[in-house]
Length: 165
Image 1 (spheres, rainbow, N blue to C red):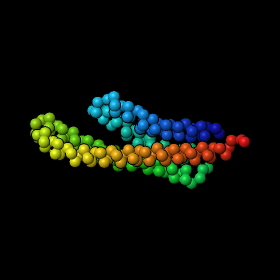
Image 2 (tube, rainbow, N blue to C red):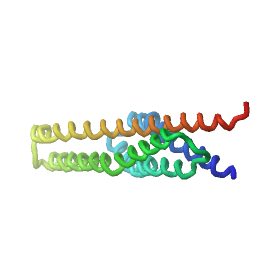
Image 3 (cartoon, rainbow, N blue to C red):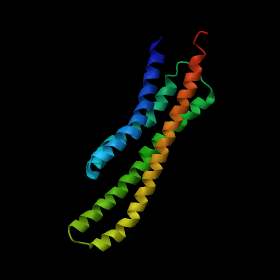
């Protein structure tokens, strides 16, 4: 009977801790240490898994909940799930499409098909669009983190009811 609360707490720890650590420690550190191309390759491999985990883990948490909680706890899990889905199916493909366009443009410059001035003219709006897409992704990721933190507060409050006084 203890398997459900244990699995729930381990899953919550993994989902919240993993997101917080990767988003606010590992990823910024990798950005500082790796070249832009290496960092891009890393993020392209990590993000589909990362956002899938963000989409699925709140659902798994709702299904393994060891005790009933107030409705806002479920809203927090729903918000976290939506954040993962928005990043996975909306913002990740948008960011990737912009990167592809920028790589094609860079290849055209490298092959001498366009001048440096033409490259800068065509790349400027792509840079701006990437900044917007990336900024929205960061905001949505922050939303996931806040939603999971909120859920953790509700979970802790719910657990306090079972601690003898």
